[in-house]
Amino acid sequence: MTHELKETESIDVNYPDHEHGRIATALFHRTRAKLIDHDKLGCFICGTREHLELHHAKIEYSLSEAVDWNKVRADHQDFNWESFLSDTDFIDSEYNGMVLCAKHHRDPVCGIHHTPYPFWIAQRYVKDDFKLFANEKGA
Image (cartoon, rainbow, N blue to C red; front, top):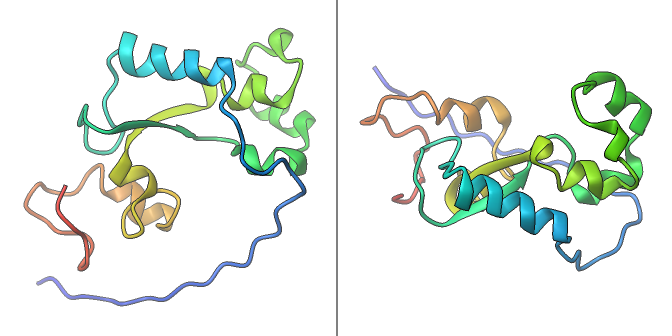
């Protein structure tokens, strides 16, 4: 039997100072083109090839000034650190990129930027006929 559980969450995050109005780097555009246009990856959650976007999966640009890059290097030794000259060399790389459709990236109900991770990742695995979010709009 399915039942609905309604939760309200509030998150208060301290963002470090960073440039507002971020401009996508040439590396970001190359990464996006490779993963979406060349490799033909679909959305990590639903597999669609429509309305695709590139998500920064491990480190978000807005948090780059808060990151201890030595900790990142220790956890991600398989990244090509010889190519690392600035934060965006990691942030905008294929290594940090995840292809998502607009819905699973930015949607206020089921997008990764708004949904607690256990519920967000579950969308990849739920049955096709199961509606995970009570207020979810169509695909």
